[in-house]
Length: 213
Ligand code: FES
Image 1 (cartoon, protein in one colour):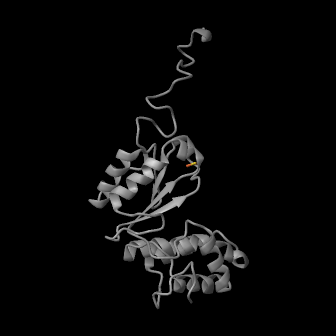
Image 2 (cartoon, rainbow, N blue to C red):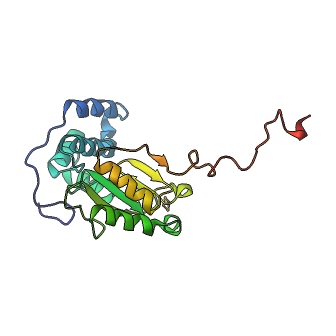
Image 3 (cartoon, rainbow, N blue to C red):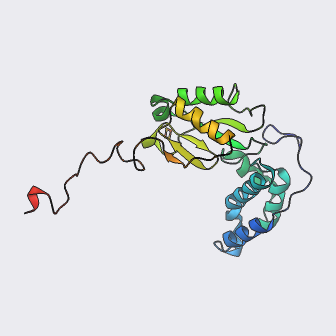
C-alpha cells in the first residue's frame, strides 16, 4: 500500500510480545465480546509502545494494524481510519524522542514560538514533521494539549514538560540526548498548576483565621 499517511516501506511482519499480550488481555476484559472493536485505540497504543520499546521508534506499521483488525474482528480499513485520524498515533517511523510543541493560542501567547525555535536549534530540525539527522528527535506541531494553565507545553513522548521557555527547552533536549529523562511537570517553582512560589489566596487555615473564633 502506498498512501500519504503510511510509508511505502513497511515491515513484513509484526507480532505482539509477551508484555503486550498481557496488556491486551487486561484491555479486552473491559469490553463485552460483541463490543471488542471498542478496544481498537488501546490496542493501537500497545502496538505503538511496543515498537518504541523494541525498535526505538514508536510507530504503528500496517501489519500491526492488520493484526489488531483480525483480533477485534474488524475490517482493516476501520483500524486504518482510526490510526490515521488521531495525531497521537504515529503511522510513520519517528525519532527516539517525539517532541510535540503546542502552538495553540494560550501556549503561543506564553512563548511557544521560543520553544519551537529552541527545538529547532537544539536538534537541527528545520520544519515540523521532520526527524533530526541523528534519528533522535521528531518535531511535531500539536493543538491544545489541555494543560493551558501551565502553558507553554512541550510534550515528549507521553510526558508533559510545562511552563517551558527557550533555555529550559534546550536544556531538556541536551538531557535527552545524554540519555537522561528529567522529571515531567512544571519547570518553574510551583506545584501542578498552583501559582508560582506557592498559594496566593486562602492563606488562613480555619484554626488560625480571625473570623473563626
Ligand atoms: S493551548 Fe497549549 S495546552 Fe492548551
